[in-house]
Amino acid sequence: MKAPRNPIVIVPARMASRRLPGKPLADIHGEPMIVHVWRRAMEADVGPVVVAAAEVEIAEAVMAVGGRAVLTRPDHASGSDRAFEALGKADPQGVHDAVINLQGDLPTIEAAAVRATLKPLDGEADISTLACVIRSPEELGNPNVVKAVLSIKPGAPMGSVGRALYFSRSAVPSGDGPHYHHIGIYAFRREALARFVKLPPGELELCERLEQLRALENGMRIDAALVDTHPLGVDTPEDLERAREMLG
Image (cartoon, rainbow, N blue to C red; front, side):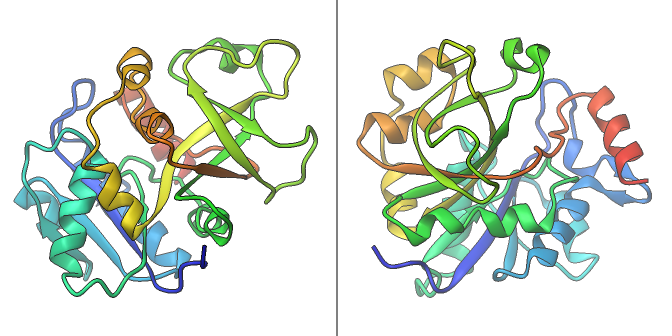
């Protein structure tokens, strides 16, 4: 398959959060968290950046700093669904051939990581993502850390790409490893995203509560690029304090 030539970054965001309500507007050094994520995406300089906002206040916060935002239905089941609606509104002519779906709760992500997400699409992947090596037993045993089972040689250098065979909240594969921490940022070929959002939830997806398994269950290929570290995902008030420290 051809490598994408004209990607777009879409950042889905919604106010509803069980553990941290209103988190897109959570203040980090005078700016809403969603603005920090938008800035990281802009710094990546891979294409236009659009925030897919479930609520008008998110869109207003982004537009106040000169960013672009589109309003989407508030009842989408996933960020991928929200990103697909936003893609249709932001690019109805189909100019962009790939979509980076960047979660709106990753204010510490590095611009280089956003760029790295596109690399696996140089090959045969329908969807690409990122992973890094797990280095602590605590991380390996934490069900909130999603593990990626990758077909890749142990000790492969950063930037290497491996095919994703499975994702789990358990410590897989068995044995000494290496084990990989999955980073929840994706790049879809445009036609792959259109196909993915039409698929029904899969049995493995429902079991693991991991949306990406729907793609694997339906024969779609996901490849992952290795990066050095994983960004902090903000899900709790404690995470928010850590993000403030890291960005201080």
